[in-house]
Length: 221
Image 1: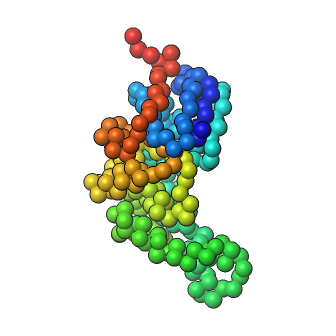
Image 2 (image 1 turned 90 degrees about the vertical axis):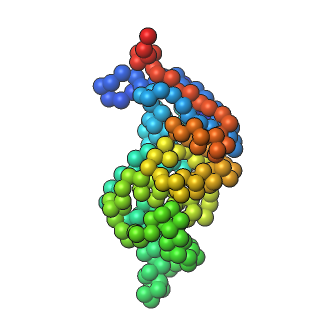
Image 3 (image 1 turned 30 degrees about the vertical axis):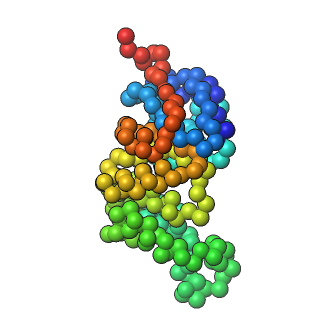
């Protein structure tokens, strides 16, 4: 199994329990839509699965570390290359071209001599032609930062086995949405996605759902 969640509960500080006793299993290779009413804690649950938060109770076991794209990406001062995870390789490549013979630079580059070209191609593919690897990520809009995180799929030498996305279609233009849909439709790993776009969920081939209800204290009559 790719994900085994057992008896998960979570509460924010000084607030009622967001959800409790959540248990579900996601099989290897499944494409699953996480559904639930607004306020149920879907985004929080994805952060728990990605290891960014810790549950109050219960346990989460995943077959591999999830590749997680959150709904909001904070630029935190990094460059585009930094958010793409390519900054160290680009630095090493440029140092080598400038004459460095330091073994550490060659080890960091790891024979990825096309990293700069692949960064450019990925940015172009996702409609980010106006920026480059050295551009501060803070210069991008929220929608552009989402597209930037999707660029990582084109840059990775190893396609992640477990992919977790939170509202990935938000602020995407028609062209980017088509690329994302095609990419996820052909994806052969395990996928868990939150999306209010039912058509998108169908077109990527999601065949299972996990429902997150409101916690009892939050339910309405």
